[in-house]
Image (cartoon, rainbow, N blue to C red; front, side, top):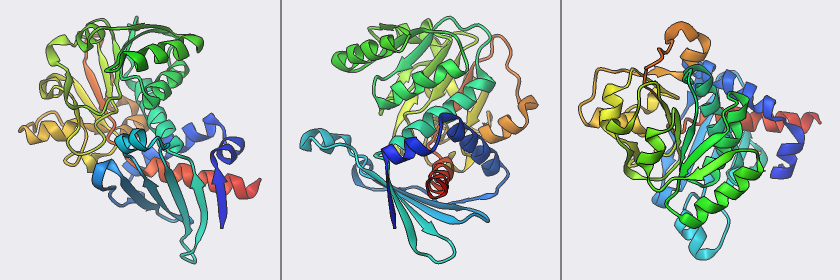
Length: 310
């Protein structure tokens, strides 16, 4: 059985390879050609994801420690393993030791693909809620779809926020630290949320006409970053996987509150048929990234195939 490290992964695939893989996976998902079993949440946000794409060679199972508190307390790094299992023999053929990298890059690329179709025509400032690893990945993907470099961030931790500003400024962005979420929201036309919040940090009355929001953080049950009223009033909602509508993400919170009218479209459908929705200048749009796993399965399979072929 092969054991692949993060170094092995990065040597054998490019960013463009992953983008193409994620794009195809999202479209396949919308076409119902992916068998994706549910993510199984465990205590303290540890989880197992597992699934299989029809007519392909591997079952994929991902195990993630996911417990940030324990990592800080024990001073240990996040641990994540992906098992690649042959569908022909049922035997494991590889362990991919990516330490969560695939999950982070997948989320950032899915957001980037949504932004390609939902980006406001007028973009003067980008707002980022959070200052962790996912916030960095999200920001580093944005130059692929926009030339805007003016960034405002809000961080619960001043130390983390200042470190984020230092790193992202070195990467060519003009980053400022806002004192509160309202300041970010009222002055940004594209907003990305990446926090583990369990209550809204963005309220409907702050959001200006022509704004797009990508909500990344609420990928687990009980998490919420957006005011439900914002989802009621948005001109269009987009979701990564409709199977998760009632399970997790921002839209699940809206359904629990009796929201039934503004039904979302799936990102894969929008990518395959861009005329499904064409935003107006003043439209408010929301993309709800719930943490679909099919793209990660496809990336893992691609990584292993590239490794054995090289």
